Image 1 (cartoon, rainbow over the protein chains, first blue to last red):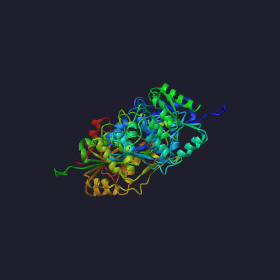
Image 2: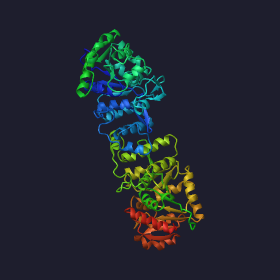
Image 3: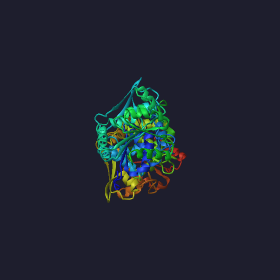
Image 4: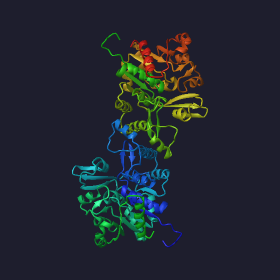
Length: 318
Length: 318
């Protein structure tokens, strides 16, 4: 990194809203030197169209058009088509805006025409003028399923339809065994000067990425070369900033705290960034073999996204 | 028809705007005693979705939500999704409204799930509260293609993209040989007390319906039973009311007049309804073996649709 002609490359692992916000902050610093590897195990078919909630949340955030309040969807989007879909008898619990729907339509059409998922996603990113790249973790269909007291259900059924109400007893990633990290993902890790694990749910956003055969090996190879891995805790003061990560950690036998996160990332990450409110947990985190970095991790606006990203990049000397 | 307990059934053959307007007038008189058999050879895949211009034009007219000025699409529909599709690099010459798009999405999804086209169309009609039924002429993919001086092209390429500019030298209905009239269509003709051929383009709206094996036979069987067939001329004063029918008749060697229409429907129809301006053509029409009925055939509003429908129904004593 002392070679001034070298432009350091960063790979971020991301799920939905939290991952999208930090990715946006990283893009502000890195531009096209950032590659986001995104979870695709939340993807779901709605009305015959492939919807990719995590990819699209990152996409819209990096394009600066995300719906600010909810974190997903497009700001100011209308829903004329969706209301008409419901009038035709379609389910109404997974709301899709009109401009958002266009992406699902075009993606589904291009996939059916034989294009690769990665290629289709990169095309949409180029159309929206992104500087960074977002890579689906795999071309294969991997689907997160959760077991509740009612049995197994698809992730979006639990997450959107059931509003994360039932306790999660078990998680599995159907199709992961036969999936494979894409050549683009593998090449990104090969070229990475640093890897960032975004403040996404470790159990259903980061874990499916790591469950893809070849992914842990690619990160391990990068670390063996000296590439540092920095994770940012999605748990602050024992609570998830958004989503059910805290409850899910508890019902699955983990600690809903920065220490619980540290335990999950031991052997994978070198550094864990935790929030000021968790400063007292530094000794426990460091005892687990991770370097703890304390800062304000709550991203409420563009400035706080960029600031957290700069703290993360400082830790890897970028 | 003298049995007062018998509710006379009418089958109309229709293409797009002209057929939709008369069908709407007929529905006002007949309610659920009307079945419209609609041309599907204009159907086209756009953005991976099945679009059925003629079915949907009739649908929106019978639902009372058609875009009044253009005759197709839904009145006041927005186009947020379409503009976004174009931003993703999709072609921009076949405009689709947001509410309209919902139909193409739901139709495509249900067909891919294994539903029959007829079933899917009837479902959409029920959702929009139609009284009459609209039946696709066949379940099979029949596609109108036209030969111009530039060679063969798909119908919508000629009709929408090229704005009907090139002269049509030849017409063919790809897939018609192996298509079959649906059981619903056959049953409708079996039960028909009258058949109406709407003022649609005889060469590319009515002809593909008649090209489906079993269709002419079903109409012939109904006529043999005494069912009368009334056609309404789409040519008024030598001009098509809408669309390229007049030029197409000429370049394909027919007369662009009510007489040309009579010649095409000889042996199929019993009555031809022609416009007041064509009163002078009555002898020529009758010489071709068709009874000529003269009335105002221009449908500019609901009242004129209903009035023309009543003239048509009087001719068949309904």
